[in-house]
Image (cartoon, rainbow, N blue to C red; front, side, top):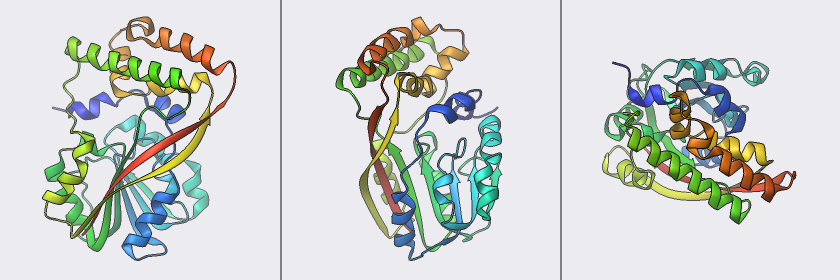
Length: 267
């Protein structure tokens, strides 16, 4: 039986790709310094989705492996022209994070962007430790939702997202399981695979109009699940959110401020 966590993210690669933010460029700088390198030889991105989180490694690694079990997301990632122009080797493999199929001690840096909470931490961290070289670095990082933009729009975003989560739980549609993000560092520590661990944060900026703001909610897993199963945008709260956000944005493009939480372990 296919993993329900994989099924949850199947079928909305286009929405994910269009609306999700690209991670901050400072993350590769941080991880390379912790790994003692100016440029990595091999980076692995677990749950790479449509490749947004692989792109920050262009010009910072000789080879990139994106591990992504969802075929539609993996197809988008593999077709990105940026990797062809960069000259770095890039491959996107159909696998789950706890069974990458990669060689032992063959990787300098492993990342999980917006994805580690969908992975069973015990076998996943064991696999990460297996493929990392001694001194290699793992980082699980996530951004806080929503971005800081407008207080009224931000509150409407959070309310709509919560409504979708509650509606999904009541429906019994999804069998997906996730692990709390605020326990990532503790999971890394107690695995025993890492000699150094830290919890860091950074700020990144972005921008968008009201359509993209609503699209961010549309890209959430709970929302996608409900819409795939026939719920209307009115039922999931998107119509109400759209009305509020259009008024608040007033046709403008606003600057958005994202807080990223980075949990690091060095083997």
